[in-house]
Image 1 (cartoon, chains in turn cyan, orange):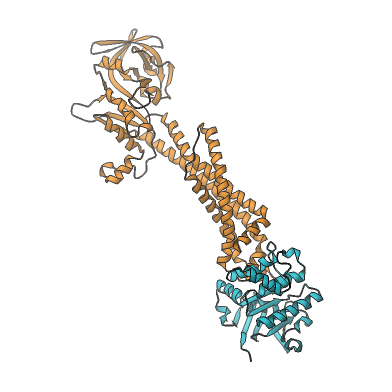
Image 2 (image 1 turned 135 degrees about the vertical axis):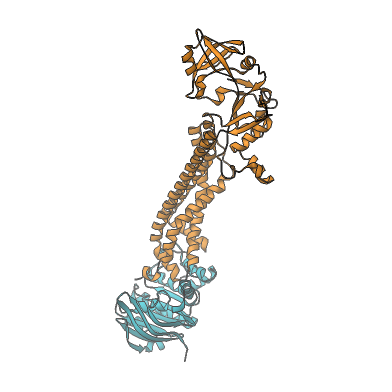
Length: 227
Length: 409
């Protein structure tokens, strides 16, 4: 059985009087694909942001790999994000004035040293070898999301986080992205945590947890994901 | 990669970049122009101030029986180390005589002096020295004396004697008489209005003091006194004395003149030297204040432009942070951008400011200035200071951006 890459205990997040995440105990195994589902405001994005070092919990404990995230400074969290995490956003969030390959190189630049050949190779892996020099505005939604995936995997992260990565895509593009993620995960052996509203997308994971009002209410194993 | 980010950032936002560039260039231009003409303005103002009177008094040193100064030593004043700072001088020989005009007569001071003397000094360009040079504010009705038997009379004395331009006066000392034609009546607002002024050589004959003078008034361009200038040179070590001697303090110029005038003692006329020093200091202060004001305004404009730009780029900054940029890396990108714009702005600002300085100098002071070499690095440094000062608030704002809030949904 694989070791846990993420362990939370009594993890909470409050915004003033509003408690977005109530004490949560969660373990995610190395290499696992965990889907997180729930209604809007259920706390799933909050959980994802905390596990990616983008937000700080209000209480409890959170260990990701060897890192105790509550003990890290602002710059420590930045280092954690660049060394450990790849993030795919629903809105893509690509730098509009940089080409596809430059957007991928941006993540390399903050991590270590930009390597254009490696960035090209990452874009070829996601099927965008012919769109290297195009800027985000010249790409379709599915293509932009693939650039986002290439950027997320370029530094070989241990943890790939997706915040509704297919939320803005049509069915065909969604399937293409999910297939791509499955292939990449098989090759790279990273852990995936994906927030989604879409039950079909959730079943691509090994396990799905359901949040409601900041509370983990249910979890289930997915046969498709484990296949 | 940094170069690509900066290049694309510039090309993508030409208006914002141009606004920052313009603010920096204008700040550097104003600083260059003001600092470039500051020295020239001080020099011109100092020259103007010299018309308000001499600032060094040369008297015989206190010796037993009373000392004297010799007219033959006067040309040496134009050979001293600070000769180019000495804008004029004139000797005076005082004597008390009985002055009569028609039936009126009274005892008064007869002063021998130079009015408008062409002075030839070996190895130096000829100069004009005399009262006309060092006291241009004298209000003369008539004209300056041109012959040995012509004189000008103080307005108060002339009134009491009932004399006027063109009339004759007789002065008598120890039984020797000398007749003068009144060339002019002078109003000064001071004690000069009680005196009769005649050519030095004539008064020397009248007083039987050939070749002698009582005092010399010297007008010199000097720098404002500071704490170092006020120190007693007698207590200075060799290096300090050299520094003091080679700085145009009124005291060091006075010392310089004293050294060539045998038997003399030179003293600054403090009320004039101090007033000049204070005025020049204030003038320099105003120039520096205006320069700082211009740089401050430019920094504010830079800050405003960068703030607006930062607001536009908040999602870009949030994204950089989300993919792992730390504070140093974010700062490097934005300060790198500002650095490039400020160097470009500094160069253009220098070129504009240099021309502006020449224009101001020509139109206001009617003179041409040559920019000193230090002005170029000063312009670049000014631009950098403006850019960095203007970047503080926007950069702080950039570093405070929370990716989770900006990138949400």
